[in-house]
Amino acid sequence: MGLIVQKYGGSSVADGERVKNVANRVTECYNAGNSVVVVVSAQGDTTDDLIAKAMELNENPSKREMDILMSSGEQISMSLLAIAIERLGFPVVSLTGWQAGVETTSAAGNARIKKIDTERLKRELDKKKIVIVAGFQGIDKYDNITTLGRGGSDTSAVALAAALHADKCEIYTDVDGVYTADPRIVKTAKKLDAITYDEMLELASLGANVLHNRSVEMAKKYNVKLEVKSSFERIDGTIVKAAIDVEKMLIRGVTRDNDVAKIALIGLADEPGVAFRVFSLLAKEGINVDVILQSIGRSNTKDISFTVTKGNMKRALEILEANKSELGANEIVHNDEMSKVSIVGAGMASNAGVASTMFEALFDAGINIHMISTSEIKVSVLIDQKDAEKAVIAIHDKFGI
Ligand code: ASP
Ligand code: MG
View 1 (cartoon, rainbow, N blue to C red):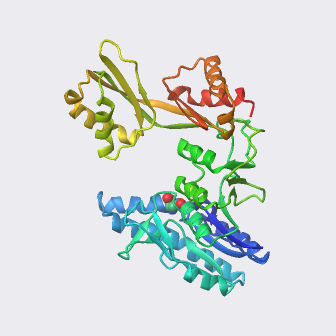
View 2 (tube, helix red, strand yellow; view 1 turned 45 degrees about the horizontal axis):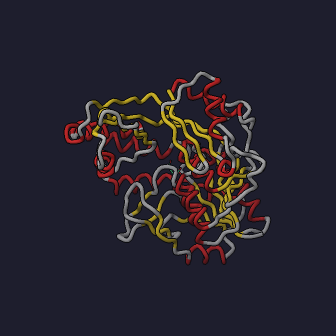
View 3 (cartoon, protein in one colour; view 1 turned 90 degrees about the vertical axis):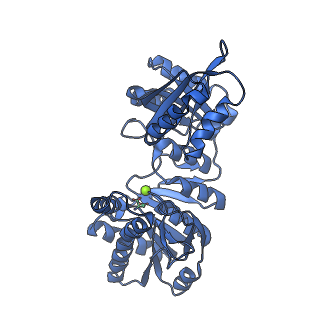
């Protein structure tokens, strides 16, 4: 018994049957004696469809109106779920983000939750109601409706769990947990019982695509116990928490991210301030740089290579070309047929040889490495995209996970 926040993703509420299924699961949790707050996403592809409708009318709509439009998807889900729960005879109320007290920054389309005024929520819970909250949205200090960025309902759920000091936050989705690799690529991939916040953060940002990155950051900050589980099957999912026994498993997972492009500046002057000039130009434009490699200087020149997302490549090239002579680059080259393949595991911090095992797997598979980057709990390599799936399988095999 306790306070449980459940979040159901778009595929879990995609149609009437699925909404009924969610209504059953929610009321079961309530019947077991829990206070239940439910966060919902928009049904199926609703958010994409709404965006497409707007684009038909205006290719450059204001972010304010887009936020109002996009937030409507979650309002449909929340009311339909409440209506289905009413039918089952339970006390229920649905609330929009602002009714639930979710206050955000004014960054339309990508707002961050500043605080949650839980008064209304608590009042409804005190009345023993099941409370359904629209995910992905809030309100800023000018009373404008905002949205939290694509996939943001996870963050709504974790923020509510933190604000209400919930005992647990369950994220229901169409997969039954977090796997050691994408099961569509690696047939032997296994579901993890548990994973740490830090590992999950690395996996989320590496393209594992299970949880919204910010939701994991927030869960870590407020120590919210998360469980990722299936809304269709009744089986345990994967728990995300602060620490787990790393002895058993050196590597928690292998991931692949195809959204990478490499840019290289050839023949830069080998003198102080060059890297600063290059990356400050990009930073000014808000372009995030990931892996960076600088070659050893030879005959007074050096090369700097780095990666950006594919969507940022064109803009980055334009900026660098425009400043080519000022930077003193002989040549600027790029390649957007690359992948970043990474291994993640808290266990590697205290175990030597993990990176070399990964490199050996790639060598055995005849795959060339273009760039390498490491952190305490992660090793990433940049390779040709055509080799990426083969690499993931070879590495997963090598570690015997
Ligand atoms: N409906 C929103 C989206 O598709 C938010 C979410 O699903 O979490 O991005
Ligand atoms: Mg999602």
